[in-house]
Image 1 (spheres, rainbow, N blue to C red):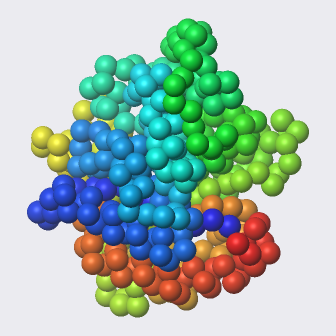
Image 2 (image 1 turned 45 degrees about the vertical axis):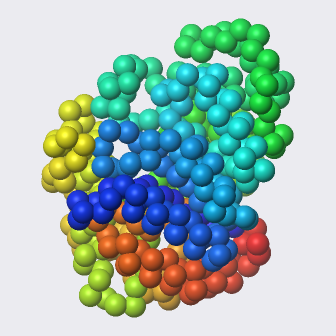
Length: 351
């Protein structure tokens, strides 16, 4: 069982500077390393305050000098946004700088405005992204890219930079049948991010993966990763505000799914969206609460869905940074030990 910290790096509306957001991220990643987390993930988004991290590979390389043990990776590299040859070189160089502590998260994007501004067709993102993944695997195995696809065309490119690792621990997001099949065939880990949706969707996606595994005649013990918003507190009066900020995050994310999001400059509006959950529903759905109850809820969720990797998203929207820090400390000191103890021997839970 592995634990990771997800860093979105939203720029709050409360006057926090860009420099402060990155400093806070450095501090939280250092806390995660000291607290026994296995991995820290860096998001990639563009052109809004939803996330100011436009280059997760650059940030991973930067954090190499601030960490010693924890693995670092992008969650995720949005494959269609890159010139493929340059991206592959940058991935290999990041792995070298991290001396094998690099983990890879892959995705094909979901925010139409980003694609419009980059001049990339939104409709072809899946096919284009999967070709980049194919070329990356070829480069890893041979050191040469000689690839002729519909979108990626690289002829006889012998790479001067090689990865530190022979293969990367790889995570991929996406529920399309093609992605599910490739994830399982390539031994990658499917990463599920339910957001504010009811937790039942976690089992639904696990079931779809199991169906694909059966079609491929692959055992049902494949790795499965889950990312959830987490807020741990012993002060119940903080739960209302935390849920309100989770809702604000959901509004930002929903807004960015529109071709023309409601925004002023790079600042997103937190407009109400159709069917949005109430604050009470968010408190029921998300992992918010005291350490003991949250540990019990998390253990049940991990066991019932055969989760092998749990990613905690702990600083979201305008949640006060000090609250996120205290929440993370409680998670490290009280929640993680209880979960690890309860999962002893379950899906590698004795790690």
